[in-house]
Image (tube, rainbow over all chains, first blue to last red; front, side, top):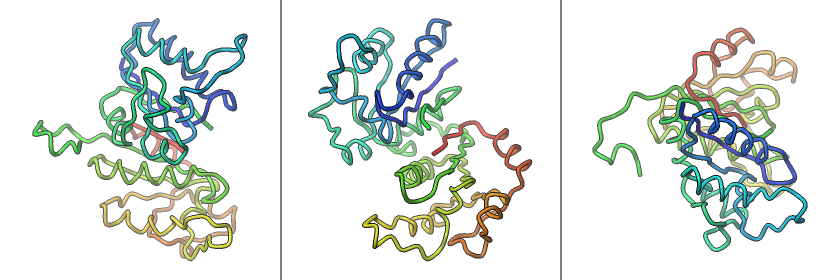
Length: 119
Length: 130
């Protein structure tokens, strides 16, 4: 099954990005596909390259970059939500790209499920 | 790119439902949810909007956000009709519990009971909630 993911909350403050990541990994392990993860609202902060959490904590940003590279997941940061919050091309971590909300609708159109992580 | 410009054959539209559950002010969810509605409408999908819980406050007419220095995006809901977004639902209980009635809302809506909301949800392909 093709499963699209929407993340609406930022890292560390909220568990949405953690749960989405663990969900994605579990789904992939069972043979499902995750074509795209769309970051919206405060979710765009997940893509900020300057995140530098303590070494003994989980590395939310690096986990996404690694998973995307291994599984060819399209990590898309909403351009409007990003600009509003200072997440632009200059501060974007590897593996992410910036695009419009149309990419969220496109995920809904072309995936079998669209799963939201947020409040 | 707009899917109409690709020259590819049109795919059948999916049923998208955007569920709006939060008050218009205090958090950004209402505004960013509305932005998703506008784009979904542009993509020619079979779009419905549902307002429930504090989300019904989003549709109140005559809101003025000047004093809290927030952009008053509430007039944007009026643009939905022009985008042929006509399936706009509110949950009746959510209005009643807040002492609101349909005539206080800025746009025409269809009121649904809890059971009808459940059927609406069950009928969708894609549900996004804010």
